[in-house]
Each structure stands twice: as structure tokens, then as C-alpha cells.
Image (cartoon, rainbow over all chains, first blue to last red; front, side, top):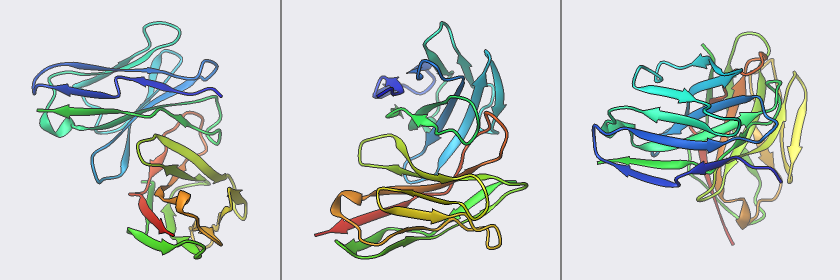
Length: 114
Length: 113
């Protein structure tokens, strides 16, 4: 069964450092997303990506964040100058097309900023 | 803006008990509605969905009916099992391709034998 894979599963970084979270979406999917879940809180939308550009982003997704699809398979989230409050579980997701199509989520990357 | 409100947890039940997790939404237009489940240590998985009013989504014994008049999408199961212990998220998305899921806060269900 196809799945979304994320690496690493857990990342610890020093405050102020840059991190790159990696995702491999399902191969025939066209829309890609990043969500985050701060411990004990709701899952929050960060950004959606289609046709090699951002299609939608939330207020959380400020200049500190960027996304890229560097090749035909990977989808990355870069967080510059990390802050303590960036500590969260980050989920990548992908969908084939229509909004009612099931979104497939990866298992997440737990980011801990110390 | 769009939002989802679901009942606070945790919900603690004995095996074979009846489950209801309430979910209401606020949205413009005609959103699609979803329940996602997150088992311990795993990512979110789609449990069921409904894309228009009066649709009933169902899967693994769980059901939810899209009620436009009450803007609700309550999750029910007639007889829960220990293996149903997880966090359940109600979510919606507007009917435009590629738009984001808006999640509720999640409800933790714990089922004991």
C-alpha cells in the first residue's frame, strides 16, 4: 500500500539553528501539505503546495519557513533560526486531486528545539 | 473563517460500550467533513468522510452523518473495542481543490477490557 514517508522521525536542534524536514509523498499525488501539532494541541495547517508553488499558507507560515520540491519525489520544509516554540510534531500529507480525496499523512517528525 | 469544535476528552469507556464523539463546524458554503484517527505513535489516518448534506460515512463500525441543519458530524460506534483506543479528529475542508484540512482539537478515547 502506498504511503507517505517522513525523515527523520525525531530531530533535536539548538535554538537558532536551521532544520530541514523531509517527506516523500505518494508518487502520483499532486498536492502536498505540511501540518504541525504542538504537544496537547490541535493539528494546524501550515502550507499547501501544487504545481511547484505554494497554493495556500496559514498565518503560522511566515518568513521563517519555506518549502521546496527539489526533485520529483521529495518535499521539504525548512525552518530557519528555530525557536523553542517551534517544537512540535510536523506532519507531511499528500492528496491526489479533489479536496474530498483522502489525504495521506506521514508518521511525522518530532522536532525538539533546545 | 472555517472552524471545527469537538467535545473535550478524554473519553473513557469499557469494551462494548456505545461511543459518541460530538463535532460541530462553522464553514461557508458546503464543506467536506472527515474523521481522522491517530493511533499511538502513528500518523493520522482517514476513518470516514462525507461530502454533502445527509451523507453517512462509515468504516470499521464507526458512522457519522453530515447534518447541515445542525452543522454537525458526530462520530458513533455501537460497541467499542480496546483496539479503538486512539485520538479522533474531526476535520473539514472547503470544496476547492488543494485546500487545507481544518482540524478540531482531537478527542482521546481510552477503552478498557
